[in-house]
Length: 328
Image (cartoon, rainbow, N blue to C red; front, side, top):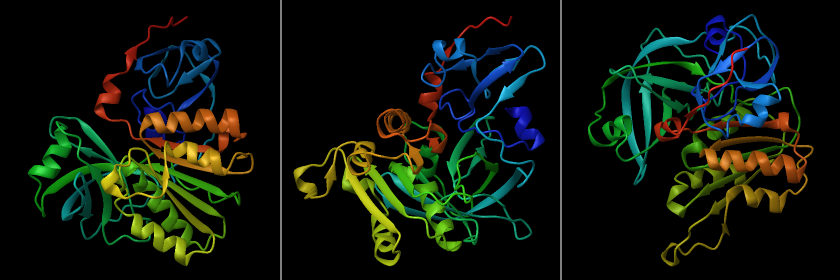
């Protein structure tokens, strides 16, 4: 995967650490061994059928592989850039919108839905999706949830000041709107998974897309849907857009009268036949995994019409297990 990214070859990928399964494809010829990865991303049974995780597969020969799609060569260059913190807006108790300003002579070209990686001083990286479409480029905006004890988010919430200088690499990822389709879109988000979905909606509006869109956004409590007013505005102003908020743990003092339960189940209740749809899902890995499994198995969604970006945390990556596979 790293070699493909360096060469500008757009193989599908997401977390790059064996946790999300976005890069999974078929090994037609050659041998590999896999590094640390989660079983849910690649099971032993899948590996026995010739599937591989290209992000953590080490080749032992020339390879012939089959990927879900190849998205072009070098469309947008991946850059390492400095950026200045322009604004820090707290939109919920545990969510900030971070606005970043690039140098005056720089512009980041990207597709709505992609992400950047902050380059931290200890060599670690932290990934966040751009929450604005590329044409809205006064700032790059990110939605950052506080992960208590998290190296980067503790700094963002407790110590970060405006005008601080950060460094990042991007654009990265293959989660973005496929504009060559006219299929109705189901947009599925949990928590700050709304960020790239927001960018995708803004891109669809900008291009004048007439495709039907329905956004299902899930949170534990109503306050987790920190930009629901914007979604309601889209629903009022766009004839082809619907918004369905879903709360999984409503409390009496929330006075919540809307949908409850798991957000992907709400999709299944409303759209039991997804055979003619595209799905764009972003958020917690458990939500993304459950949605893909159930939509394909129970709602007839073609597997290659499910596009996802699972927000894998450092804890998710740490759960990866070292699977030992023979090289030959």
